[in-house]
Image (tube, rainbow, N blue to C red):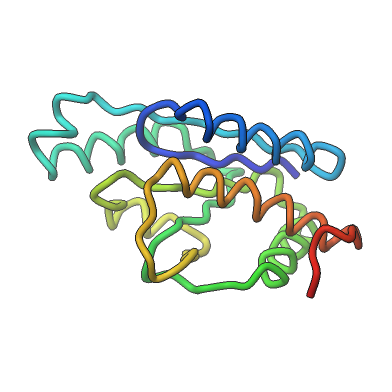
Length: 157
């Protein structure tokens, strides 16, 4: 099963990229994972919220394929602990899911049209985090989930 973390916004700062790649490298022994950054037009993103969200929706819909299992991250989504992340990934593998897409929306959130396409909506926290930091958190949680599934000592419950 392929896992793709899609994030709307600019490229990672160096320290974030180092952390994301660190966890991706550790995860590779268990599962394939990659980060896809969807970069909207900067002018629109800063001047017109409605148009910015529409443009972000277009970027997502252009890339989304029928075989993708879309999970949207949203502060109003279901909060899962790390073991539950692992269980969700196991269920998706058991279902024969080809590609899981975890979507980190833009600064103004995700459109309702994209949310309707999601198979699940998860929340990392009721706190709000910078999008680049969310990329790092998700990369770590994916690694942690596969560590749990493979009985690695990384996760201490």
